[in-house]
Image 1 (cartoon, rainbow, N blue to C red):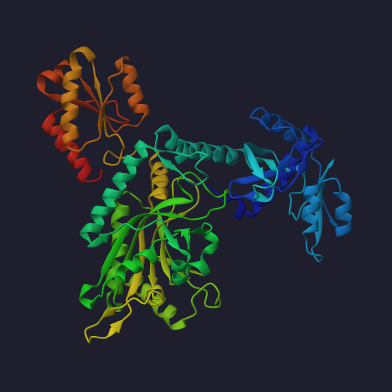
Image 2 (spheres, rainbow, N blue to C red):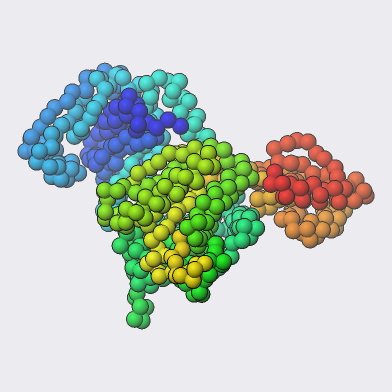
Length: 583
């Protein structure tokens, strides 16, 4: 999907169309007052105070009609420059514009744009006349707090988009419709994956039974992979003392992303935003020899990070998340092999899930920023060169991003292009020479001397939350057999005659660890079949006289009208292969 904000022509067109919307609003609601109307990656919006009036679905076509009427008038759009005093006088009846003007620097060039009977404060640029604004669409509306602050008044935000050509608008609207179909929030609701509730809080998803089953499959999958690679899994608390994060350095460098501290007895705690400090303490619990290393500590850990309320989105961006986290404690000589192993694991997982559209980003420090990054040039140069060396040896294409590293070391991020929306970061791998020093960690080398280990932080799925959102949108909720919360739906043709056989088949399948249920409702067969397809259940078994007599099953794969008959033994082998081969 095109990024309208970064396309200069479309940016100007949409900026102008935001003013066209505001003018139409002013015609229909003369008392309306306006906050801001910026261009976004997907078009534009305008935040508006309509007093006691509320925008409804019926109002958008009315506004579009008025916008088209104004456009046909063809008024020129004229720019004016104002002094601060002139601007304050011009917009004296609009407290929102007055606020903008008062917060401008004295040397700022203040400009406004006039089109017919409407003038708006704006930097511009704009198109020459409103007649250029022909192909637009108002998409949706929502509430938005003034200045994004929940303590302020709720304004009404209207979203729209504008294109130069009608065919471009039509194509874009089709993409938006596809995006709606793939939206994991919509799919998550339809399939009972997760829910949210104001009483729990924004960004705090509740995983429903189907979601819990899906997440458990993901956990089992990556746990088995990590076990084969020698990872040791642990459980640690969801809180830590403020002193823990002062020791790690997160209190100084990450505090704005953490929840406020809370006092219990004589201690101050915070909800943990990450797990590395806990894992450092676990490593430091015992004395280690170089022969013990590498030590790989993994955890499926619940973490809490403060996200602005406007940024939280379904499972994709949350305040409570479960990380697929691990920390590898290695000697300097082991960095290459362990880093290669992590990258290989990432590539292996992506192959299993059919993820192909991704890129590697090597995030480096800004050497001029002594506040954000630990000030040790030798450590940083050594760490960054190690990662470059490994990536070059692996012949992995990557690009460098200066200023994007963690405060304690460089990292490798895997940027994945999802079916809808901008790129997201799924997997990460970070090199860390600092935290082991802060926690006074050590191992005894071949000469009996005390040395400080190097730590590799890595997350293959990132968080189970974001990875699930990604999966739902990639597949449109049509999950592969081995991942689906319900793999098999059994429909007896006649409840009186075939239910007992259906129960025997269900019992056998459950004994082989398949997720299965019987649809024993008193409904017609056709209705049950259609509903099974609507729920996107991978396999539907229809059991009647023939199947009961021959001890077989007749199965239908989601999305196909073909039916297939197999013996129970053949069907068990077939499903086992689907699970084993991750098809």
